[in-house]
Length: 174
Image (cartoon, rainbow, N blue to C red; front, side, top):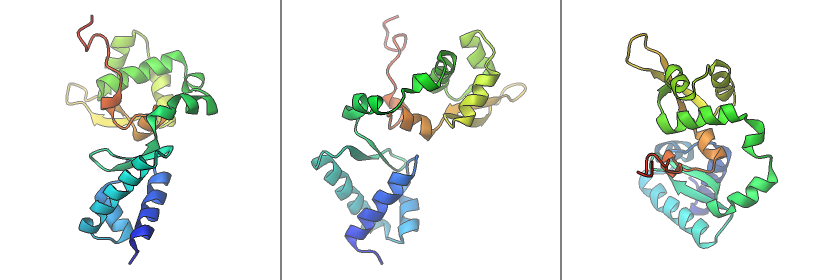
């Protein structure tokens, strides 16, 4: 059985290598540690990261734990790698925004908003793991719907979709 500091180190290693939140249940299974033992260790680890003001943080997303950079370093990090906008066209970013705000959403619904065909863009966003299939919509023809992925959240520095900026039309400033 792992000691407390070893559990913390193992949790850090697991969260560091994963692009998505890791549930408590999965951590319990991987680490072979009791749930009642792991919960206070996770609280302690989160507190430790927050008190030491490290560049990374561990966030409880509600569905699991995620290691990510602190929001205050977003501007600095943007300087260290090419901006996502340089890797995605304006059309791809616009399509991604429609999906992010209206998910789960079908191709036809996205095309209705954008006014253009998006087949190639959807394929590219799927290949870049920014979106994923979210199942078939229960309407005539049962079209596939799409949603964003944990990789999307990671790249845009979000812990959840609730962190997306509020659209002007949603805030009553139409």
